[in-house]
Image (cartoon, rainbow, N blue to C red; front, top):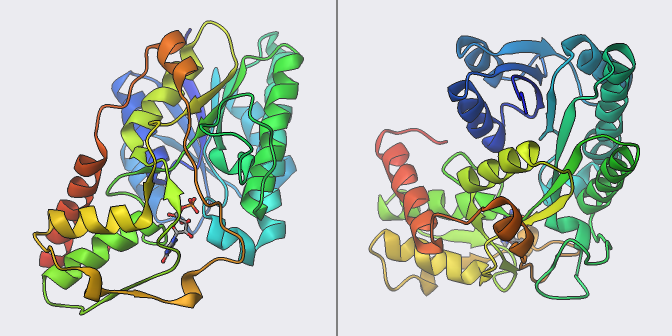
Length: 326
Ligand code: GDP
């Protein structure tokens, strides 16, 4: 496949940055839709990315932007990516994480009308579409039953991508479980923990406030997940693929691993549970079965849980030492 012209939303996020680096290394040309106020826009332009200013909430503008770019591949990473934030902005989440994906499909169909060939499309779908899943581990066939505004928006987008596929487009869902890296925003629990632990280790804080420590998550390494999305984009046939490590750990496990990486064993007294961080509804446990991705597309996770945590703690210790916050 010639993935040589790629339209990306969410290019200034964690996964977007990793994807852009991979695509530039492959010699692709990239068109990135970014908001005007987005600090990442200048960095993308400096890297040689064609930056189009727009808002995912402007559905007509979004479809127009895809049509104008006439890409061979659309990668949909944009939207509200935090479950916690989706409870504060459910309507906007539905628009930018749900309806915006239909606008990308609409734009792709217009390209097809004009050129005879629709671009391929990969949607960053999510384990949150399964909610409190009826089976464990979850697979591509697990019933969709979201329990958050984020999950509901992602479920709509997921279905829209399947409908585009039914109409003949090479449109796929990468059903992504939590995936982390030093570029994860501080609003996510992993980065909040590694940054907090680095501050405690440096003597800047004396405790870390968290919510539900018993939640289980299947946490992977973000560069592996971006690699999975590229494999899915380049697969012979489109489809839906779970992208997950198959291992699940508690938030408490993550905290313990982060303190261990910082050389602190006696950490229990340093962690405070604050009800402000406990969610109205929280998925108790996620774990994904990525057998399909492993067997059909040869994917496998390359970084183990303890090494993910250690890499993030190392990064945050260096930031704290340099007097920077994120
Ligand atoms: P999510 O799985 O996409 O919602 O990713 P997060 O990293 O935001 O949350 C992972 C889990 O950590 C959820 O079960 C949260 O309820 C739990 N958690 C516990 N304390 C915190 C906290 O202080 N901040 C966040 N963001 N999550 C927390």
